Image (cartoon, rainbow, N blue to C red; front, side, top):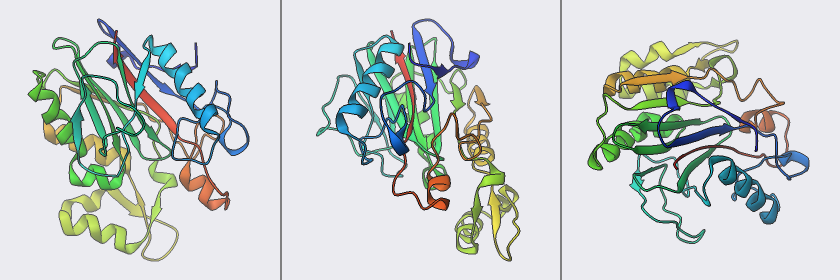
Length: 254
């Protein structure tokens, strides 16, 4: 079994899930060891083996991950798809057993959803752009189309960059404040003039609360600050590394 972080909020009838760390795979170098990204420059056969191990841990044959584009788009899937068929979106929803739904991240929010009563699950990638433009709400709405009720839905935010590690410039702040002046509360002063520390986990939690979800849990895990367990795009950038691995969060009906 490949190591994975679990949440009590997602434990339930026929539901398997895991927030996988960077440990337990076969990748090497910058990608050591459980890199889940086909978009990295890692060896494709290593990524394929890593994903196979994740799927096996969930107890399924297929681990489906979309072609993520930082969008607000969610899609229903009811059968496996090939690499070439990957939908261009940032959330997958299903009521079909045996399909593992996954998303990748390396600082962005990776979120798993479940309505245990309706047996409907989802996975969403929520970076700042997706969270701002509505990917979380779109995921809930798509689950509802299959028969879920948002007051029953439980959602858990996995490893994500923490506010103390997420410095942004004035144009980033303006993007949010122009959308809603009250969003300024998710920004704290940084050490540099006109720079801020953005609370992405806090913003995601706010969006869920506003959407009327039944239960939301933030695991409180900082990708930037925990190099042993997590990949981080920002950490790799600060070190001027040429590439970086991605974490996977996945859920399945088994």
